[in-house]
Length: 283
Image (cartoon, rainbow, N blue to C red; front, side, top):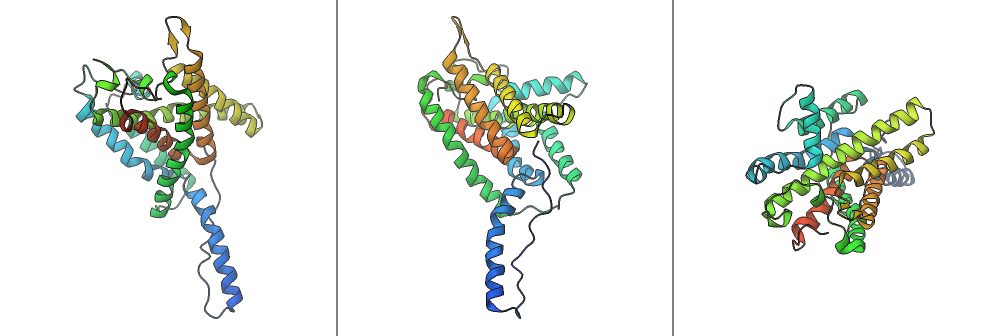
C-alpha cells in the first residue's frame, strides 16, 4: 500500500501586497513548482482515490444488476466472485459486499492517515487524464501480442452462449469496469500490500527489494488467474502477455497508487471489449 505522505505543500500563492515585486515573483514561481508536487501527493491519497473510483464502483454494481444478471445464471468478474466467496465464508452475505468493502477500506485508511476531508476537483480531473496516459503502454503491449492474447477482462469472465463477443455493449462495458476494479483490488491492493508487509515489515527486507518481489509474485498470480492453459499445455505467449501486463500495472500501483492502476486497467478493457470490433474477446 502506498505509504502515507507527509504534510501537503503549503499554499504559496498568498503573497502580501507590500512585498517587493521580485519577492512576489519568487512566491509565484514557488507556487507553480508546488502544484505538481501537490497533485502527485493528493492523487495517491485514499479520499481522492475513493472519489475518483466511486463512479466506477456504482456503474459496475448497477450494471451487474441490469445487464449481467439476465445472462444465463449471471455473469460476474472472477476476482469479485472470489472476494464475495471469501466474505460468505465468514457469514457475510451480500451481492455488493466487495464494492462496499473497498469503499470502507479507503475510508478507514483516510481516517487513520488523518488527512483533511477535502476533495479537489482539479486533482480528479488530472487523475482522469493521467489514467488515459498510463493506458497507452498497455494498448501497445496488446497490439504487440495481437491475436495471441485476449484482453485482461475477456479471459477472466464466466461468459455463456458464445462468450463475451455475443453480449450487448452495455454488458461488455460493465465487465470491463468490474475487471479494472476487482482484479486490481485483489492482485495489487491486497496482494502487493500483504506481501510488502511480510517481506519488509516482518522480514526486514529492503523496501525496494520487497516491492520488486511483491510485484513479481502478484504478476505471476495475475497470469495464473487467467486462462493461459490450452489442451496442449501452457500457452507461453499468453502467459507472457498477462505476466507483463500484471508487472506493468503493479508498477503503476506502486508508483502512482491504486486509483490510477484501476482506471488504466479499466480503460484498456473498455478499448479491447467495447470500442474495438468484438471477435471473441481478443485484444
